[in-house]
Image 1 (spheres, rainbow over the protein chains, first blue to last red):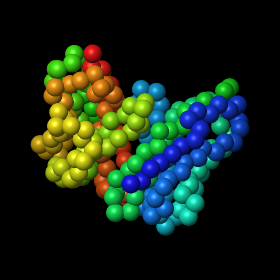
Image 2: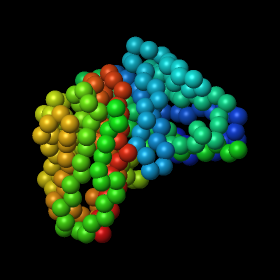
Image 3: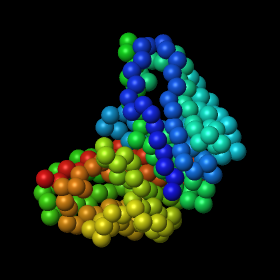
Image 4: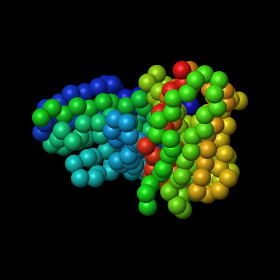
Length: 112
Length: 115
């Protein structure tokens, strides 16, 4: 069964800093990996989806990478802004499952 | 499209009462998912439907939980009888494809508190 871990659970950075959020998974036969954002009291919003045949995806200031051999994914946020403050969750779909297993998320605070 | 719509947003009930959570997926999405989120366990998949048919309910914790999808635009998750440990945020999500391939769209959740 796929297990997804995100460390640290919380992160605080000053505005303007570039930062990296980490995600690790146990099943290297991952089908895809998705990054989500969750604001307090809200649902999850999909940010980036990386298929198993891809190594990275970019959207604006966000870049996500996938390294299946090491069981890791990273979400890079450039020039962080206070509006980026939220909880970021990664989720992996194991081959043959088509179901997402979620990490518990990293709560990001960007300090003005 | 208004996105995935869930109701109620908040529900407070007493132990033993029946709880019904409702979801309207995005029109045209063939897949509907029910998740539960708690601090301890994070986000867990309870059940998912494809074309209104339940495909995998292995995440449903107990027989007290049941889910239905009578048509393509409506689904319910019922807990009967409810217990304090059922307190959580329940999310509904929909997708055009299995989550292995496509983007997943979430509703804003139903926060359940069982006293």
